[in-house]
Image (tube, rainbow, N blue to C red):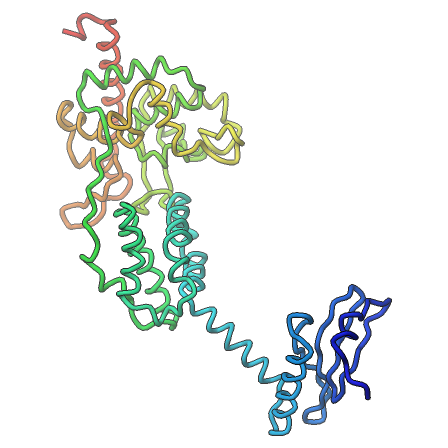
Length: 406
């Protein structure tokens, strides 16, 4: 039988049917109808006819195909099926790939983060994709030790992102602990790095807490020239003082018109506990007006890009900037600090009512978390008192009531 030559292989053209160019001993080049060229070896093992794929030409040359053919024949001579050897190698390779930090990380993310908020998922995925996978992704997770993880975290720290470095350590720790639970690692090296990073600087959200300044803010909000949806979002941020993400994602189905409450499910809350926000008369008036515009959709504050999503996290911040407030003066998150300070120091409401309404982790005297209806009547009174107080401050700032100013 004539052996194949490099020239014959290069000149082989596609035909109406796949054809085989034999090299001898069961080795041949399969040329398909599109011109693709594949090395194959037909052999018999334990009385059965089998075919072993040896690669694609020109990635695998004629010389390399013959060497692979010779090795396969040698295994058969030893009573070993080369096809089974290939299958085991492929399975071993897949198992190894499944044990890398990236493979475990993606599995952990898909399995356990479905019930987390969208913002948490986005933030976590960004840390994985940008800061962890590029340096640890291909490494077997069981082989990663504390010094290697620390070197990766130091890279984040070196660009001034100390808070992100701490978050990355926490995220990596969650991935390692998932690997331990699924039998792919024995320990979590992130636990050895406590105190190894620079201390986080406590972040304070800028807020107006002087009554006169708050009154001027209320006047500025009244004069805001943006869309009705954005203006309502800013006004309700002041009245309800919930987290900006909770305000933005408010849904009409969560508004209980009969009881005059905004009822948030646990999965939307940072503390993973259901939450009730009593609605003042002023808040209800804003919602009723807005319902005429967006009430047919899911979200109270739909995005201008489409009703299937809500306004972006920068919307209220941009509105504040357009009113002349800098990032050092007032932020979307600052409405919470504003209410917290004035409700306590000026209006004198009970601190546990305030903290419960802000949705902080408040405990009862026995150390148990209060349920969502705790102090509800008192909180309802407080929310109405807060709305009335904002109206009073607005009136003073606009000079519309001499008695109030006095």
